[in-house]
Image 1: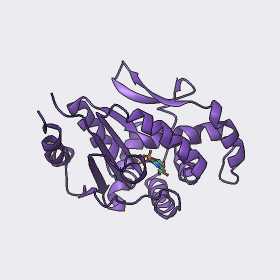
Image 2: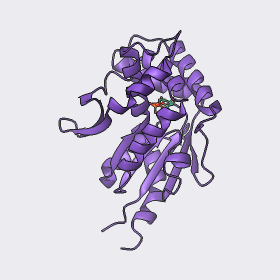
Image 3: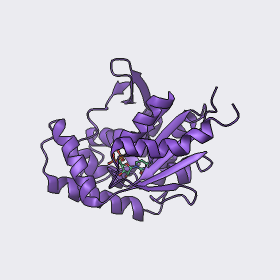
Length: 232
Ligand code: CDP
């Protein structure tokens, strides 16, 4: 039997965090949690309720609703994927729109909302055997995780990756809109005072520019395997 650990992957937008995390989770039979999907689901809710738009943000109204909003993950047996659910309904396909992407980092600056998201994330990590990606997972959510990665990659490459992903799901979008959105979110995520995006001092820094997915997987597993095969 192998030792179950917590693995965190942080980094700027579109560095390939979720793609590689899903692959590793499948290989190790770990649970993969996309923490960004939780902030996106909350943003989607706030948009539906007209609490947030380009011109206004009624944070108090959203905070008032927090108690009655449920955000969790359920396995979709059709594709064996953990999908984010908002009040019991999968919103996995609704939360990747440009509208959500343009508002999510603003919403994610608020301490009260983050506190709530972090509590759910802690509960998910109770059993270990989990891989979670986001912005503050190695610094705030699981500062004692056994293994932490921080992925980086050039802005243009990230924008190209995300643009290709979005055009595949038919999102009507231009490369420049994607580039602008990623740039804006990076700067909001890095510069916020509450749980800013930064590399944990004990995280392993990996630049993914020159790596294929297979190469990235081999690299991550070279750090993971020795840890999980300890104490056999
Ligand atoms: O997929 P991508 O890397 O573009 O972003 P995401 O993981 O879906 O996260 C969307 C946004 O949620 C980020 O730009 C952050 O503003 C926020 N977020 C956060 O504040 N903390 C996290 N742990 C995860 C996401």
